[in-house]
Image (tube, rainbow, N blue to C red; front, side, top):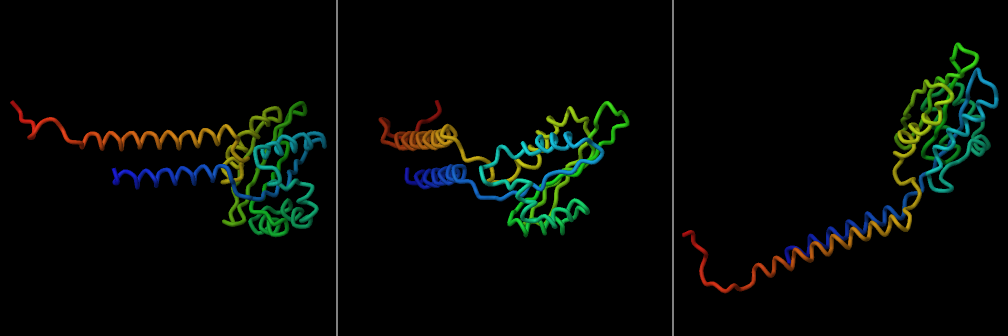
Length: 209
C-alpha cells in the first residue's frame, strides 16, 4: 500500500497544478495594429476590420490592445510597419506598446470583376520573445471572409498559450471531478492490493493436477 501512496500523491499534485493553470492563465499582451486594404471602398475596409477584430473575442478582457490605442502609442512605428513589413518593424511596435504579440494584415482587391471583391494578402502574427513572425496568406472572395477569419483565429490566436478566457465554473468543476475520480480509483486499487495480500485459508501454493 505504501508503494501506491506516493504515486497517488504525485498524480493528485500534478492534477491540482493543472487545474490551477487552467484557472489562472497568464497575462500575455497582444497589440492589434489593424489592417490596410487597397483598391476597395472605405466601407469594405471598415467591415473587414470588424471581421478580423472578432478573432480576438475569445481572449481575456484587457489582453488585446485595439488598433486605435496601438496607433496612439506607436503611430510612427505602425506606419513604418505597413510601409515595409519586417521583423525589425514588428519589434519596434512591440517595444513601443509593451506587448508580446503584434498582429496586422495587409490586403488588396484583385478581382477582375467590378461586381465582386476578391481579397488577397497576408495576415501576420509577430512573437516578440522569439523575434519571429508567422504569415497567413489569404485569397478569398469578400463574402467568404467570415469563414477565413475563423481559420485565422484557429491558427494564429487560439494557439497563444495562457491567453484564453479563464476557465468557467463548469470547467473547473470538471477538472476537480477528474481529480476526485482518480483519487477514488487509486484508493480502490490500493484496497484491493491489501485485501489480496491478506492471509488465506489454505497452507501451501496451489499445484497443477
